[in-house]
Length: 155
Figure 1 (tube, rainbow, N blue to C red):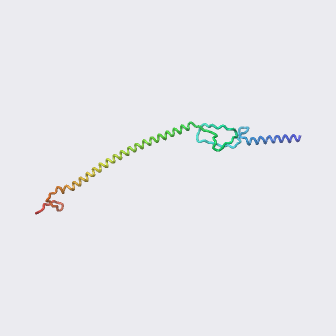
Figure 2 (figure 1 turned 180 degrees about the vertical axis):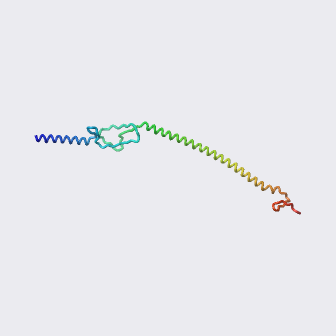
Figure 3 (figure 1 turned 90 degrees about the vertical axis):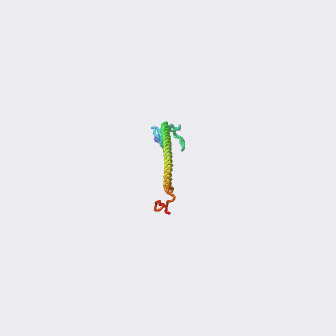
C-alpha cells in the first residue's frame, strides 16, 4: 500500500509537471489565453488586415511579411490630396502668368513714358538753345554790345 501511494503520487506529480511545462511552452492555453511573448504590430493607416497563413508557434524572421493592410479610403484620400495640390499649382501658374502680363504692360508703359519724356526734354533743350542763339542772329551787324545793350557804333 505504501508503494501504491508512492507510485500514485509520482504519477500525479509527473502528470502535473507535464501539464505545467506543456502550458508554459505552448502558444495557447486551455482557457484561450496566450502564454507566449506578444509583439504589437501597428500600421500608419486604417484598413482590412489579411494575415499570412502560419501554423501556431511558427517562427517569423526579420523583414518577413506576416500581414497586409489594405485601405481603399486611404488611396482615395491621397488621390484627392494630389488633385488638390495640382489645382493649386495650376492656379499659381495662372496667377504668375497674369502678373507677368501686368508687369510687361507696365514696363512697356514706362518705356513709352521714358521715350516721350526724353523727346520732350530734348525738345526743351533745343528750344532753349535756339532761344539763346536767337538774339545773336537778330542783332544788327553794326551793333556793338555795351552793358548788354546794342549801341550804334560811332564813326
